[in-house]
Image (cartoon, rainbow, N blue to C red; front, side, top):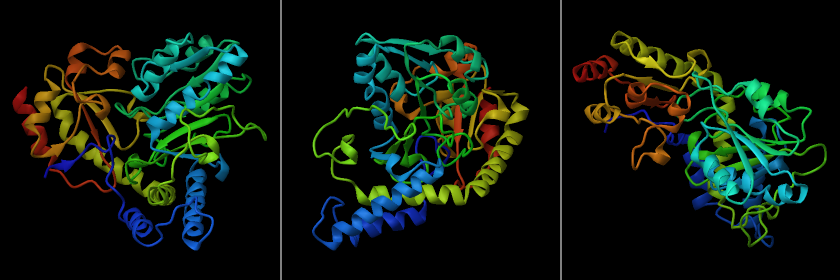
Length: 376
C-alpha cells in the first residue's frame, strides 16, 4: 500500500481511541437512554464524560455539546436550525464565503431558494477572508455569519478571533465550521463570541459517523435553534436517535488526546512539511495560500503545466493524495476554493493537496519529486 497523505479527507484512528471504542462495543454496550439498570447508567456516564472532553477543547460547557453524525450534519443544524428564528424576526440575510465546504454552501443555497438573501465573501489571493469585507457585508437584518476555521483544501487558517471581534457589537449569530481545525489549531475557537462550532470525529483520529455541534449560550440564554429531524427527543430535542455510545466515547477520547499531544503533533507535522518542501522546491512549484498562516498538516502545491490527475496516477504506488476535497472528488471539477482565490487556470489544474499527521509513514520524497520531474 502507498503511504497515506490524504488526512484532510479522513485520519487514521488513534490506537487508544480504538481501544475505547471496542470497550463500549463489547463490554459496556448499554443504551444511554436506559434508566432502569447499570448498563444504561454506565453508557450515560460515558456520554457525559465525552461531552466534557469535547467541550474542554474550546472552553465550552458540557450542556453546550450536541452529538451528531459529523460536521456535515452539524453545519446543516446550525444553518437550517435558525430558519424559523430568521423568519419570525425578519432577519433573512446570511453572510458566508466562497471558500466554504459544500456542507455549508449547499444548505445556504437551499435557504436562498426559500427567500433568504445570501452574501458570499470572496477571499483575497492568499485565501483569507478579510475583516473589511465582513464589515462591509454586515447589515441590521443579518441573521448568521458562517466562516470556516481551516480550509480543507489549502490549509489556510482564517482570522476567526478578529472576525469574532468584528461581530462583538452585532446581534448576528456566528458559526464556524471547524472540521479541519478542531483539536489541531487550538487558538481562536475558545472565543466566547463564536456561537456555533461544527466538528467531525474522523478528522481528529476518531471514527467516521460521529461529530458534534457546540452551541454556546449567550449569558444564560440558549440559541434559538429548531431541530431538522424529529423523533425520540435525544440531545435536548435537537438531534433524535439512539446515541452511539462507542463512537461518542471515541470522539471524547480523541478530543482529550488532541489537546494533550497538540504541540508534539504540530512539531511532527512541521518537520514533514519541511521535508516535502525541501524535495519539491527545485521543481519551482507554486504554494497556494499564505505559508505562514497555513496549518502544519496541509500543503496545497501546484506544478503549473501539469495535470494533477496525471500526477496522482504517476505517484499511486508511492503516496495516496488528492487534488481537492474528498466530497467532490468522484467527478473532478476545478476547485471552487482555488477559483475563488482567482488563481491562474494552469495553477488550479496543476494543484495537489497533501495532508498528513503524526501517524504518517516515512516517504522517499526525492523519489516522488523525480517522478513529478519526469512529467514536466
